[in-house]
Length: 192
Ligand code: SAH
Image 1 (spheres, rainbow, N blue to C red):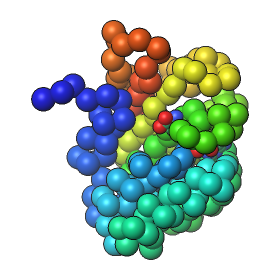
Image 2: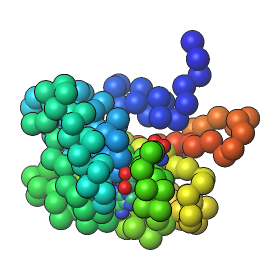
Image 3: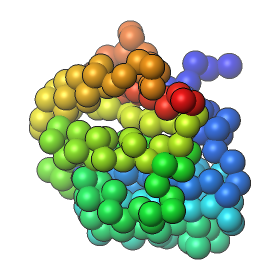
C-alpha cells in the first residue's frame, strides 16, 4: 500500500462515514472532485450542498456530476461558504453527516480567487453547529496562496478553541515532502 495523502485520507474517512440518504456540505467545490465522491456516497436519496464563489467551479462540477447522472443529488450555489448557513434547509440543520473544505485556489483557474482567513472562519463557525453527532468536519489546508499562512493560523486557532468534550480534532499530512505540502484537519462532532 501507499500511505495516502491528505485528500485521499479524507476520502477514505468519507467512504467509511457517509451513507446513502445522508446530507453533506462541500464548502469549496472547485473542480468538483470531492462533490463527486460525496454525491456517489449519499446516493439518489441524499443531498450534497455545494458552494463556490466562482461560476466556473459551478460549471465544472455540474458537468462532472452530469457525466455520472448524479446532478439530482447536488444543490450547487454560486455564493461564498460564509453565507451557506442560510441556504441549508431548516430540516437539514443539525443533521449534516459531513462538511468538507478544500481551501486555496481553483487548480488551473484564477489563483487570485483563494479562500481567506476571515470568511473561512466565519463559515466554520456557522456550519459546524449543523453537523450531526458522530459527523465530521474535514479541511485540507494549503500554504501557497496570498494570505495562506494567516488562514492556516486562524483555522488552527479556531480548532484549538473547540470544546474537547464536544469535538475531537486531529491533523494529518506528510512531514518530509518539499514545498509545504497540504495537510488535513479532521474534526469529529462527538455524540452528546
Ligand atoms: N487548492 C485545491 C483546490 C481548492 S479549490 C487543490 O489544489 O485541489 C478552492 C475553491 O474555493 C476555489 O474554487 C475557489 O473559488 C473557492 N472559494 C474561494 N473563496 C470561497 C468562499 N468564500 N466560499 C466558497 N468557495 C470559495
